[in-house]
Length: 262
Ligand SMILES: Nc1ncnc2c1ncn2[C@@H]1O[C@H](COP(=O)(O)OP(=O)(O)OP(=O)(O)O)[C@@H](O)[C@H]1O
Image (cartoon, rainbow, N blue to C red):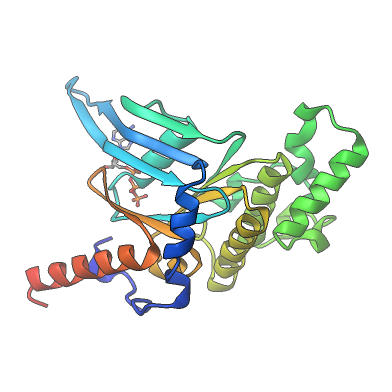
């Protein structure tokens, strides 16, 4: 999707964008997500190495929600997979607080058990917890994403956004420190979209230690971000406070329109 076709509705500054002080304070804290000069290449059918990620460096402090933006095919999902350890970088280093959890785009691929409660408890089997401990972790996680009232509901009766929130609760129940979220709102209507993003924002802010990196195409979602990254052609072009990144994107859109003589 070219940037000129993206929503420009939220190009005005808002108090949420003025997080410079919190960013400076956060910079003194060890990042929850850190990548240093990460590159990733694939080998094509001709045996030639094709670079997908080029020298990407980033850091996300604990207790913050950051967004990763950029045009289609620039490498956002690949970067998220490298951060999650699903792909090995060709070069560079990744440091992520553990446990971390990757939540995918399609809500129907996230949930595996028949009821909400059973689904959130599903990943806890490996921890050797008592049933009281499991119940307490499941309730706290569902409460965090605003889904406690749904604990006995059949999964198939939930909306897409509610399924995403259950998937996030599953990660929280496992005490994950990092949430890597790949275009969660793509298949959701506006109401569900806002519900999921608020659940993540509130969870991250209330925990003070969970960090989330959220891939999106929707500029309006930046309203909820503490910081942002903008990628193009496998490179991170901007990394910092939301207002600076938005200004950068806006300048890009103007350049693009001028180029097309619009
Ligand atoms: N295994 C692979 N083999 C060959 N090319 C790949 C592979 N994985 C990713 N790519 C290419 O790398 C580029 C980046 O893909 P990626 O899915 O990370 O982009 P993206 O920014 O997430 O895109 P979108 O916004 O469309 O989801 C694309 O050109 C894609 O075709």
